Image 1 (cartoon, helix red, strand yellow):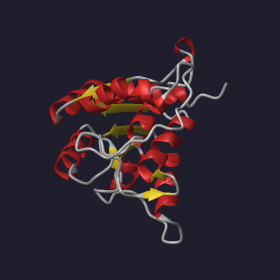
Image 2 (cartoon, rainbow, N blue to C red):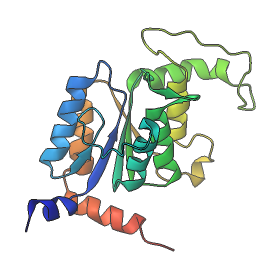
Image 3 (cartoon, rainbow, N blue to C red):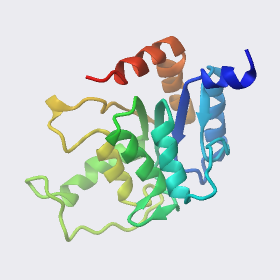
Length: 202
């Protein structure tokens, strides 16, 4: 079997994350997934197929459409690639959720803590956004949209009993992410079965 044919049989996993200040960890995360036998797509690794006639946003969203599975890392830093109102990474994660891709998320511990502290100011008693709420950048959390992204990942707007695919693991250190990767992705046969089940048409 040719190398090209062998690669086509690999499961394509898109690793979505902001990059700045996270380069070394991201390389280790992707290397671990490659070691398990996945074809890893990640912009920092320069492994996302790019169409030169499309924008960065279009190429990234096409990668979400084309990947088999999706792994999102929600960091306390929102990222600089903001197109319109949202960063590209945010739009990638939103697209994966909308398409109901087989997806896994991890989110930094600081996001969960900030969310619990700030939600009393962000929302009124009925759960509606407070228009007067303003957030200034801090070293812990640079943009309130990180919390919005977290809420989207856990399907916060859907009644708890109706949520499916809303599991988000908390991490504090790189070792926590690597443990999640080992737990979820070490068995490619398990992942193949999940992909097959979730791609079945009703």
